[in-house]
Length: 415
Picture 1 (cartoon, rainbow, N blue to C red):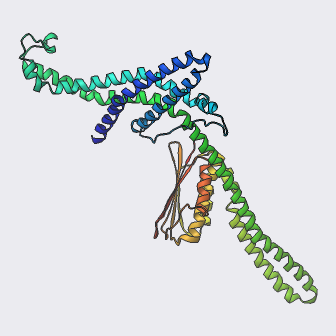
Picture 2 (cartoon, rainbow, N blue to C red):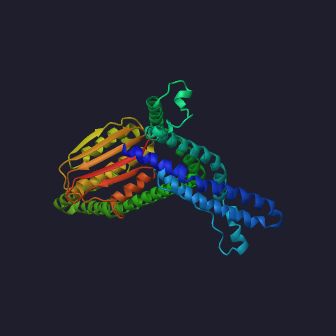
């Protein structure tokens, strides 16, 4: 109930208190537009139009502040085109004329006026009727005794008398009071919808474009970092071991004729080095999407990861369909990297992996009973996972207090 009352009061404030600025904005912009267009031929109209656009921008900023209350979202202000560096005075004066958003502000100041009139009138009417009807039993004692006064129930043929009138007016008041939240909310959303389309639509689109560009940059950076890490690990690990293995086999070949016993020892050492190299290559291959992922999908690929983890993994995959390759790769690498961190750092005794398809999103939840302390700070493995998820419009949430437990949630849109 409190939330409903608060919502009605906020919407009422928006339609009533916001009405006078709307009227003022309409009058100023119409007058400025007419004066600017009428005097453009003598160049006086150009700065007049620029000033009118700046006034429309000021009113638009006020409207954007109101929109955050009605639409329950933070205010978004578009970026207005700045004058070029080194521009002269006249160029700076007329700069608002070159910004598309400035003209949208002007259009909003004009188009918003008739909608604001309708919203204001309906809000006043639907507040006046309940207040008047519900309070009639108080002031109706006086009005019903005025000589010659005819009440509405009598005109409708419902009867006369204080009690009949009181029942009628209170019933009408209760009816309008019930409808009030819906009407006020509808009128507020009508105005706010226009404001969002004209005043923040471009900004939201630009924000979306910036997010996509940032996501692509994060994906490129994450991929480059992964390749550099893989190259470094191969150079420092398997490559050095293979060089040493080749030297051991060459030495064993020379020892066969002179000292077969020493040759056998060298070969045994080479076999041990070969096994260690294979183990390192298997560990490195976890950073590369396996064929089972592209051939059979997430469920078998995640089962293979769980089987290789040194910590017992309770795996529950409820998303059995196939998804975009980028989405499947992102989910796979999140699980692979997280299980590696669990095995190395968590000191956990059990780990749970849950993958579910909820509406249009894949939700991956990984938890362990370890010591906690995991975070997405820059320079840590989880930061790379966050960048990888952002490339597919995904989000990574980490809850890992000191002492545990750790819960990592990754959400990825899957269409």
